[in-house]
Each structure stands twice: as C-alpha cells, then as structure tokens.
Length: 227
Image (cartoon, rainbow, N blue to C red; front, side, top):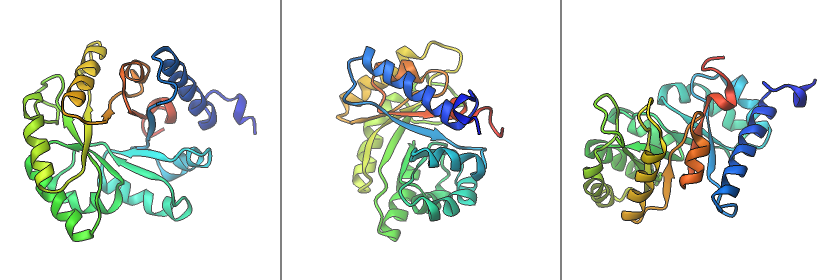
C-alpha cells in the first residue's frame, strides 16, 4: 500500500485540506479557534466513507435523509462517535427522520419546517441544534430564508424551543464568495449567534479567513461525486 504517496488517497486528500485550513487560520490569527471540517459524503457509498472515518475524522454531511438512512446506521454501529450534519434542503415530512438520524441540521429555512422539527424533537425527546439557512444572494432557485426574515425565523424557532445556534449560506456560484461570507458573519454577529456554516470545496480557504465555524467540503476530500 502506497497510500501516503498517492495524491488521490483519502489520507492525502484529508491532509491537504487540513493543511489549507491550518494555513488560513494562521493568516487570520485564529489558530486557537479553527473551523470544524464537515466531510460531505453525499453520493458516496459507505466503502468510500469508512477510510476517512478510520483516519480519525468524525464530522460528516449529507444532503438527503433517505440516502443517509441507507448507509449511516451501519457505519455508526462501528463508529459510535460520528457526528452527522444535515446540510441539504429538508422537507417537512422528513423532519422526524432527520431528527432521529442527524446531530445537527443546517437547513432550517421556514416556519413550517420549524414546526415540524419541533414536533419531532418533542416526540423523540431529543434536541437537535439547528442553523438558519439564509438565501444570502437572494437567488430565486435557492433555498434559505431572506436576510430580512432571519429575526422572525429565529423567534419562531425560539418559540418552538428549537436550539437555533447559527446561520448557513451557499453564495451565488459564479461570484466572488468573500462579500457573501462577510455578510453572513455580520448577520450572525448582529443576531448573537456563534455558528457560521459557510465554505465548500472551492472556497473553504476564503471562508476560514472570514470566520466560518463549519466548512462543508465534499469533492476536495472524496473526489468527484459518485466516484
């Protein structure tokens, strides 16, 4: 096995991303408070994920409840301390399944979903921290609440006893992400929230420098989707 010499091995990819994050933290004077790296394992089978867990990585992200249900229960039988993050849009009728499976939900974006999540948490006797997904670029096709609706949605979450602890965003694909990350960082500050879920494979270094507390990195760790 020449895994450590193979640039496409899980070990090498993880080491490269971790080194990039460490360098960005140093530039931003935040060595003591590095962001959490969430390995986005959507579309990848358990066989591709297990080597990354074996390397000691513990935070993973999935986009779809049904896909996560198909692979994570078995993986968790072996690795009990994995933390699973729901990072995709969530349908209200999947709220109970999401609460049962995930340790954090990054995509709370509307009052009806808050209501469904609150019921699921009460029924299961389980509190799952949530992030408000913000449509930071005001894009019609994207999920997330409007910037102007953040306060109202936080109040709704609070009223339903949902622990809403931060904000999440996906900047417009073809534009420089830094201004959008800076805006999300300011909005989180304005609302007294500690977590900022921002930064993906193409822009996690920039997000780290601007103050992200959670990076959602997929292809830089696993290669192209499904491969």
